Length: 126
Image (cartoon, rainbow, N blue to C red; front, side, top):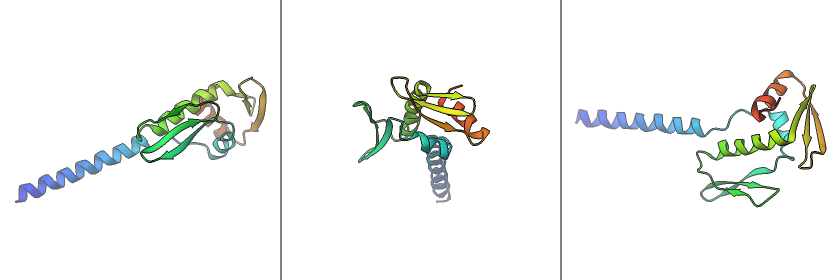
């Protein structure tokens, strides 16, 4: 009887640890709130809830992806980073946003070096 209790406890701990690791892997990365929020109106990718989780949609075309729930935030970040490399440019202490025709839409001034560093790292731009 004591062996069964030990096995059940070990399994419960194992499932808890595996579940916690799965949650940590599926968690989205840190985003600078002010800059990320300012870029959202220009970013063509967004999430839509569905019965089985989330879908990633594009405002510009009919792209609709249905990645597994554990990968949805990572895939959204990949799409956003690809968009950012093509449409964002850092000039001095400003972030410039361009449309598909390379026309300047908006300029955002960085308020501190952390915002600039986060933008460079998240969107892989210089």
